[in-house]
Length: 338
Image (cartoon, rainbow, N blue to C red):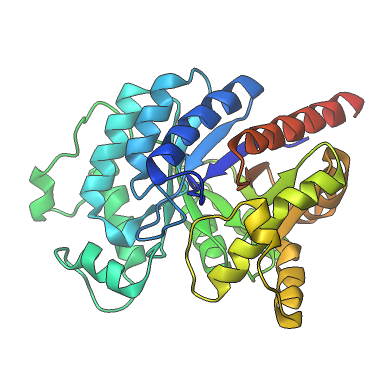
């Protein structure tokens, strides 16, 4: 079976304020490290009442310091919000402190609304249109020292200069990121949990079009999915209703903390709401370990994924830890049987 990883949003609930959500992330990372998960990635979101962490690099340092084996990274740093030099410095510093355990996942979306995006970028050198590719090229040049002769950045060094930039991954939910990852020879992580584009198409195209570069010699595609797992299908369904209602609200532009099961059950639903929830369930795997494993297998095979990254956002922190335990156990049993 595939290696397992975790994507964590540091979820804020109606009963868990942001500071407690951050501490829960550290606790969950320790748990994942003991379970044998390969990576633990933190997302960057701004001005979202449901997500506690706007600065993954800070959380990466905290989590790497209290874990022993698991790789820790960003899922991801939203590059248009940052000067490439700052990204290079921060992640070279993390790599120096935790050598061989850091990942730099990069996204091109703002991770927020338009007003917050403007506040984040208004003091930066913002170009008209999408300048993601230009920023990515600059980030790479800080590592390769490949600025052309006479360029003013030739005299600027990304410190610490004796630590390499950690492995770079491009994150995406469309064919654009798939194509770009293949062209530049980097790892690719596909966000099935919110994408409308076909995951199998994106990941198989990435693998087929991949060109080896100094960044990677072989392709590595991560399939990121949302899942809620419990001992029984019925209990998993009960827990998942919080995610159902949260997603319904997000689709309406209501970015609020994750509701409890009881609050979600009391939420008044129209027929249109129920239809929307049913459609969104195509992006959420819910059930007992055997049910979820069976449901995941066709997507894993079709996408030819090298790794499965799971996001679980239950209201109860212990239920979330239990979900990841059950998934790891199920994958281990399947591996042993195979």
